[in-house]
Image 1 (cartoon, one colour):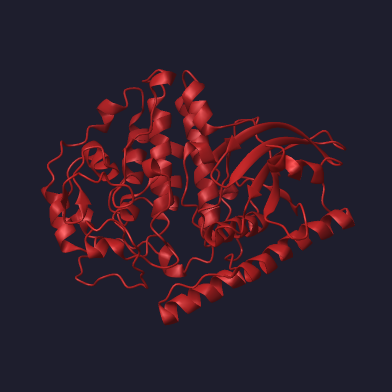
Image 2 (cartoon, one colour; image 1 turned 30 degrees about the horizontal axis):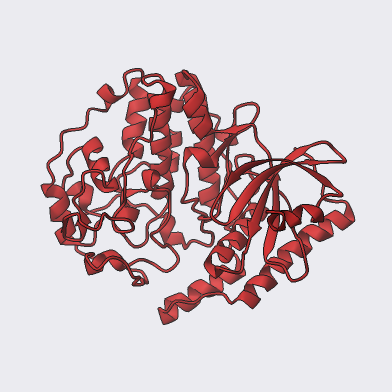
Length: 428
């Protein structure tokens, strides 16, 4: 145990470690106090970063994104350090917030519609800014939405986010019927042998194993190529549903709106029956969604590339959705917004601008506060990687040496700020 806490010695002159806040597969989050200012921060300790180069690349991308994203709805990164010259761990300092939406939902007895309205409006403003930079978050869920002392939502955990997303991913036209199959570079990956082949094809830069299962959009579950900003809108719709249910359910009984036990094709039950590469298990994520939203029409399935899968989905008999009955305390505008955010077809799903323009926010909307970025965020290492993928259609991975070189640049940036005293451990 002592060996795993050796990193504390590298910051003990500046910081006091208060307590552990959380733990993940590759990182641990701690509450630390800056001795000079007495201000507390969240320290994300990333360990064994070069043991898995894909995870290392995600860490690098998150640091670069947080370094470049300038929005009050995104958690601020304050410093990045390592513990030795030959390092295999990183210390990432972030603003510390009072709580998160997951804890809020599981402990707060009731919530007013006005409070829900403000939370969702702030989140949508942040997503509008994020998408204007060419970034998809791809892992929006209550646990990744921090709450400030004033109760304002702040997005965190950009480990699964993607920057440098091509422009076409952010164009969401209302589909007219066409027989054309969406274009895009794809890759095959190993999964259960029971999958149909079309379920193994994804764009290189937009992989399918993203988003926590309960907040994963249908187009990701169904392995569609070229998914776009609709995945974040879907996840926010799931969050809205949980907030609207708070007044109808006791805190101890609350759960995600789509609580699937697995999500084919990534974690299917081995003995379940499959048809057309889709799971027939009633608690599979896709089936839970369909039981909640109701049966699908041809229009609902037009975004799918596989006609067999379209027919299978349309043949599934589900009761018509009665969202009004599911949300006893929710108002008409709130239910209407929820329906628009949870459209099965991403091309029929509301865009972030359509959500902001919705009547639900009419009495609080401040258009001047809905800022967008002046330019897309494009990382040189991402852009070159994507070009290689497009032209050669092979898997390209950054080497350990190249990743270390890029991480060194970020470390040098923060070190220079500290040495120039331009960097202040202070919350704006």
